[in-house]
Length: 244
Ligand SMILES: Nc1ncnc2c1ncn2[C@@H]1O[C@H](COP(=O)(O)OP(=O)(O)O)[C@@H](O)[C@H]1O
Ligand SMILES: [Mg+2]
Image (cartoon, rainbow, N blue to C red; front, top):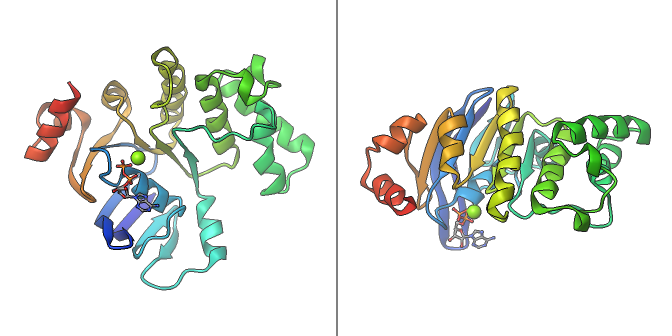
């Protein structure tokens, strides 16, 4: 479903993603862990082409961008629609209700009528457990509720892959589970997902594979049980020991 070959991303002289290769099969959930500044967000942002890689080839669902050559803005825009991204900060439109946030992209980007968009939004709002809150504005919602709107908004665009960048890191502890619950449901429905998170319990329960990234390289990858109980690399051991 996702194939990354030789991905490179630098910011000026700083090489942040160093020749990364990665495959993610359809329907699999990959959890990405690693120290702060190791390149986790940049990797997800390259998949969503919020950052333009300096080199490498990314394929998603049979479509390919080759960053070893010039890539057109049009190709990037089309490619971006293959992935839905959820950020630590929910980034909702403050002047739109929960429903409005979900319908916005459907009417402006996908060109659906208000009615068509409303029907899709209704289903997604129910799916993320916010039926009673659909007419509320972001400021009237808790962080967990706002993040669930953000997930519904991303899903509305019908992405092939969902990317989550520390989706629960800004939440009060008691609100974390309601967001993880929605993510678990998505995983169970077969959504292909790449998730950067510090929620190791979620990783253990939901991930098909855990990837440990440090200093722009994939140091180690494996099943959660393998990575968490029997890491092979010193750097992985050190990182995991700091989490306890
Ligand atoms: N837009 C940017 N401009 C310059 N440096 C950046 C930018 N984004 C990230 N970086 C740097 O790239 C490195 C990796 O960042 P990031 O991918 O955010 O790491 P992580 O998500 O693992 O904490 C860090 O050193 C960070 O300061
Ligand atoms: Mg990050």
